[in-house]
Image (cartoon, rainbow, N blue to C red):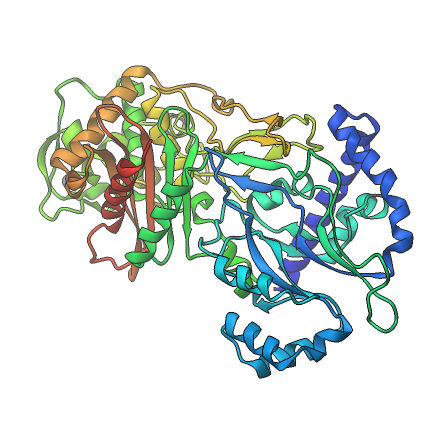
Length: 595
Ligand SMILES: [Zn+2]
């Protein structure tokens, strides 16, 4: 455990050092007036430090950039009324009646309130884990009490209490030892930076940390002398960064209502571990990305396993990988028109058997796909080379990371940018040149060494829907200044990782096969959807006690709007495919969305 933590710390330090050096270069050559204004800000602020000691303060807004969904609805940064108490001498000597009224408004007791007021030496926000959230009526009633030193103030809570935290956004935490190294220059030279600031730990909070930090917090300040009484003429005031362009906000591609409803649904059916990804069928934009179990930053385990975003972690795919095998065979003309195959339940050569006892009998390719017949796919694998299978997997985006990234350095970034830093690669073979028939047969049905992430799996469907054109899945559209003008945009673009694209005819055939899965095959449960749906099921046995269940597909069939992948981890081997049910309900939720 120690060793692992050390490696993480060293890697982080190294990356942040590179980051810092790049940043210095950037600051020497400001690329826009607005970036330059950041520097001006620093210069007017040094004078403030002289008077700083006389103030006590609390942070009511950390000044960090916020996240918006695709239509501009805030995902982070909920502003609410809370109660600030200033340590003025008379606060401990308030009339009994006033204390009683305050206690009644706050659903507390006079004794509790008195105890609270007595203990505090500095200005503080009334807390209950978070600063307390006052209702409009409570706020109004407290204002009417007109107690000098007890005031209703705006507080900005980064992670709204009504929603679950999102893995793709991540969270921030204090890491003074990292911050000190990573932001050494900023801490020394810029107002609003110190080693105790919150920095991004995972997700977009981490990949965009440098830009999100902004100009520092808004503080509620209170001037004191030695006897904790108010200095004449200074008193209480808000001190905030004076720059109209900050904080920045990150306009994501997420549909927040869709995301939240899927999260609630997953909780209602007690899907304990797994992932759900919803992509825009036209360009691979991420509309929703759910990972379970939920993220509770206050209860994190030290191994980071709980932080894991399962949507971008690679798992054994089972039969959804028959899409890759079918694509490889079609690409190379290895299936004759009207050819029939035979499944008698066993595939002697390598001890493989079909999931259907006694076999499927005679099948066309489309029927074999719809029934997910292992024996027919093992037969196909005999006609394929490892290279042909690898190329099909790559063309479908099942090998390389598919999240939007920029390998070049372009301002305002100071290093190559990968929005989903925790994304894993897929894999088809350990040895891409293998000639072992047993390995090829197992691989063709998604077993053995094959791994794919739910994000890749959903994007594979987008690639088919775009007739072979593969997109990088985008999570962010742009980063904006406070006035809404973009600082940087992230245009949707095709992937440049794959060396070749599938033929249109191959994509069309597989899309048709996926319709048959729902019409006559293993996905008939999906017929219950609001929309007509198409897809492919999969089950990957991990051990005798559990398997991973998959379903990936698209809808509505007539005019595809979304590509969805569902992964339910560690399911009982005898249970029916939960992922098919979840897929159908996620599409039903999508069908209810207003736009
Ligand atoms: Zn079969």
